[in-house]
Amino acid sequence: MRQLSRSLITAALPLSLLAAGVTQATEVDLPGTMAWTAYGTNSSGYAQAVAIGNMLQNQYGTSVRILPGDNDVSRMTPLKQGRVDLCACGIASYYGAEGVMMFADRDWGPQPIRVITTSTASFGLSLAVAGDLGVETPADLKGKRIAYIRGDDALNKGTEAYLAFGGLTWDDVERVDYPGYSRSFDGIIAGNVDASFTTTVTPPAQQLASSPRGISWPVLDPD
Image 1: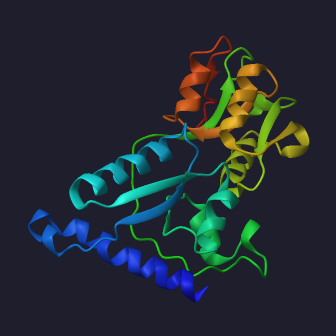
Image 2: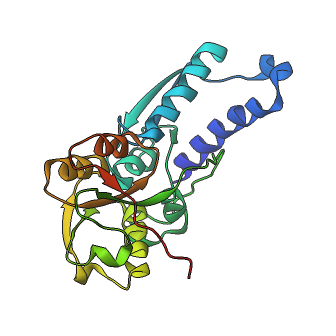
């Protein structure tokens, strides 16, 4: 764990200098090669990691190798083992630092993780539902087939929150397990499952929208 902590701190120092401005670019001393984990290849998170890697290559000559992972465990494990320098992760990084949920285990948490940068955007988080089902609110999900992503509590907790908004739990729907979130969208398009938690801008959601099933986003009634 100490080795992981040192690795993260070493990586954080030069990256933090990127925000100092172009005038200090000559002071940045990045390694020649870095390895990161990120979301799957057809995700917006992967595209962001690749874009940052291209910038580092063009501006500082640093080659960044991106290792895609289907779920939180597959993204965090290489970081835990010291095989990568950084993880372009989501909320699971906080779970790992706090040692909660899937990381509440002697072999996992808490991990000495440090957040060196975050991003904000205007996209939404929601359950993407096949558009041919007539689902308009979370309550309409009763009896539907809902994707559960193994090793990805971040997405599953979002799903549970949407179900709870409609007065539902996993007991009220048919849970369908998938090893990764992108595969759950393949399942929706193929007609094997009906909904999966995601962002509104991710490529799998766009693929579902352009498929024969279409896409719908349950409305959350503010009242």
